[in-house]
Image 1 (cartoon, rainbow, N blue to C red):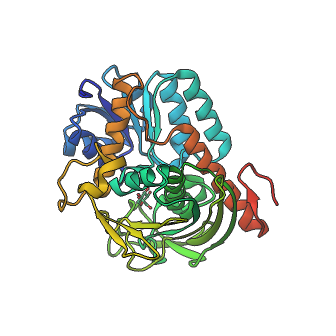
Image 2 (image 1 turned 120 degrees about the vertical axis):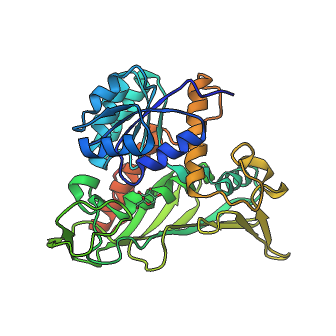
Length: 387
Ligand code: SOE
C-alpha cells in the first residue's frame, strides 16, 4: 500500500520533532515544512533538508501550505490545543504529541472538532506499537491469559534526577499541573488500557516532589540534554511531582498499581508492564524490547522472541527486521505513523490501532482524577466523583 503521496509538516524541533522526522522518512513520507522559532526552524531545515521553513512560531502559515497533508505537533504541551484546533480547521490530518492538552476542557474541544471535521487525528502514544505490546494485546483478546486479575508496572527515568536538570516540563504553565504522571504515566496507562481493551475507572494516588527547589539554567535546555558547563542558575520552587504511585481500577474489574519516577538513577527510559491472569501471566519491559515472558504456575515459564512464531499474532505487519535485529523506541514511531498514514490513504480501511482524540481525552481525565485523589487522599472516579 502506498502512502508516499502524503506529505508531513512538523511544528516543534526539540527532542521529539526530529524523532518524528526520522520515522516519517523511514516510511518514505516526505517532510515538506517545518516551524519553530526562527533560529531553530532554520537550523532544522538546514540539518534535515526541509524545503519550507516557517520561523517566529508562525505555524498558521505552515497550516496554509498546500504541500502539507498531515501536521505533526511536537511542541510543549501548552500549545497543543490551539495548534490542534487550528490544524483541524485548516482541513489537515494531525498527529499530536501526548498529553493531548493541558486540561480536560481543552481535550474535549479537540475531540469535538476532530469528530466534526472527519479528518484523521492521532495522539502519539507510541508505546502501543512495540511488537511485544501488540502481541500482548492479542493474547488478552484471545483469552490466552484468562481473566485479568491484576496489572503491575512502572515507568522510570533519571533525566530529572539532579536539581540542576531542567526542561520546560518542570513548569506547570508549559506542561500542565502534573509532570511525571502526565508525561510518562499516561504512556503506561494508555498502553495497559490498549492491551486490556478496558478503561481506567478510578484511581488512588500519592505524588511526591523530591527536589522542592530546583536550579534553572539561565538559557533553554532540551529534553534529555544537560545544561552547558559554566552556565548560571536561578533557584525556583517546584510545583510538579518527581515521582508517584497510583492504584487503579479498570472497567473489566482488573486492579492495577503503577509507579512513575523521573528521579530513578540508572533507569533511563524503562516502561515495565506485568499482567496477571487466571490462566497465565505475561511481562515485558522496554529496556529488553525483543522478549516477552509468559509465566505459568505448573509448567515452565516461556520466553517469546520478537519476529519468531511466538510473536505470530497481533504483531504481524508491525515488524520490519528479522529476529535478533533489535527494534525499539524509534521503530514504534515508524509503525505508528505507518498506521496513521495508511488510515488516511485507505479512507479508514486500515485497522486503526493508534490513540484517538477520545483516548487522549481519557488520559487527561485520568490525570485530573490522579491530581484530585492525591490532594484529597481518596479514591476518585475518572469522571471526577470522589468516593
Ligand atoms: C520525556 O520524559 C520523554 O521524552 C517523554 O515525553 C516521551 O513521551 C517518552 O517516550 C520518553 O521520555
